[in-house]
Amino acid sequence: MKTSVFLVGLMFVLAFAGVNGGAVSLCAYTQPVTSVTTSSLQLNFRYLDDEYRDDRGNVLALTLAGSFLRYYDSADFGYGMNASGSLSYTNGGWALAGAGAVNFRFYAPGQDLFAFGRVNFQWIDSTPTVAVVLGAGYGRLRDVTPLAKAMRISDKLLAEKFLTKAIPDDVLMAIAKEIGRREEYATVDELVVKVVQLIETAKVAVGKLGADAVLYIRQIIAATGDTRLCGFSVNAGVGYKLLDPLGARDFVLFGAAEYAVPWSVDSQFHLRTDGTFAPDFRSYQVQAVANLVYKLTSGTTLNGTLTVSRMVPAEGTPLDSQSLDATLSFTLWEGWAVNVNLGVRNRTGYEEPRLELTVSAGITF
Image: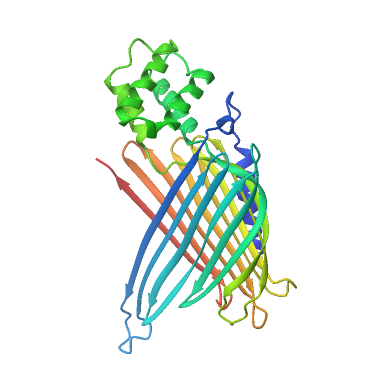
């Protein structure tokens, strides 16, 4: 646990050490509706036929892991769905695990104060735990990706010498608002035309923007997987366990917090934590997930996710689990890249942490 606390602290230090000192802050951008959807799926397979005839060291393992996040927020209503799970097979044995939640938020008029309803669920093998929670909270997360895209457009066009100087802050905001209204445009090309008009009207372009500049703009607007969030949220409530593997239906206390800060267009820190507690606090379950995307240099990016959880049953042994997945990507020169992947797993019952290190290099023609 001490190592996990240190790693979370290190993520905070990196986040605030690199906060962008530019004239315009990503968090200055607001839009009426925030709508974010992300998902991931990973498949790992390992086969080892050892040198012994009794196959004492043979390994046949298959793991399918995935996650899904849906976040919607408007002036008076919001909802969220998140789920993560894994199905694994190791030497003849199957294991299923996962967790998630569905929540609905109703805001006070003109305020960030909200009431919420939430369903938490978790399963280990075929045994589910389900709790319904009602409560209140304060704060919200906002999608500032449109302003990040506007900044990328300015940086790219300036680097390619299509601009005489960076796009002014007021024009960046105007471009961001148009990108935020993307669904109102019939096609992406219509949106690109509007962005080109805003840039040329600002009189920072070297003449009319040509086909290459327009292509760069379109690529940045259409890019996916680069969501940037800003803000925080805290909430607490009282719930009731509808299903419990031990058969103990009872009231529970619930608390959660979330924080996100993008300190540059290419860097993001996102922390989520929640906990469910018995009224007497003798048993509880807490989990924290910290994700860091940090652009160290123009050709080096760090992407890491740390997950820490602790489950204390009313009877039995507490279960602790920590995992770290980190990828350091190096772009050596055009077309050449090196990735260093580190995976660390530790949980109650392990004799020592499991460590996996992979280094790969490739070239794109």
